[in-house]
Image (cartoon, rainbow, N blue to C red; front, side):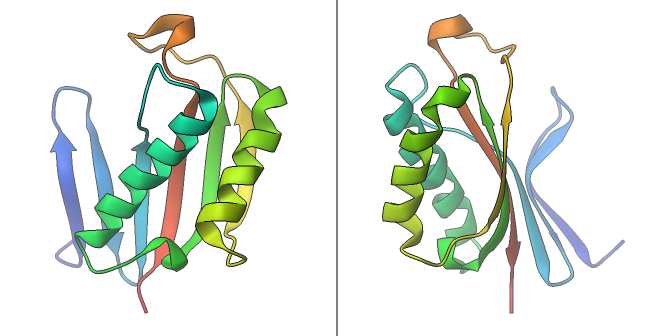
Amino acid sequence: MAGIKRYHVNEENAWSEMVEAGDFVFLGFCVGNVGESVEAQVHGALDDMERRLGEIGLTLESVVKVDVLLRDPWNLPILEKVFRERFAGKYPARKTIQTDFAHCGGPDGLHVQIDAIAYKK
């Protein structure tokens, strides 16, 4: 389809970092500061998301839905604290899921991944 744009396609792992389709933008695997504290990783994931959105002229304010993957669900209060800071009352709909990551950093590496949907208009 000509109306779909894919950004930063990873051929080796068969995924795109960001896909624009109509009025929506889909972001997958937003991560950052892997190996640091959970709070730093949440900030890092949102920084990654913000950077990608910035490529197409959007901000975190355009995010309408997120799926958050957490290694330890007891870190939810940390996630919520960072979301309050970063989204400043304009919160996206959110689903949080506990998962073990199959990531090269092992148990001390990746603790947070965020996927998102943003609205363009």
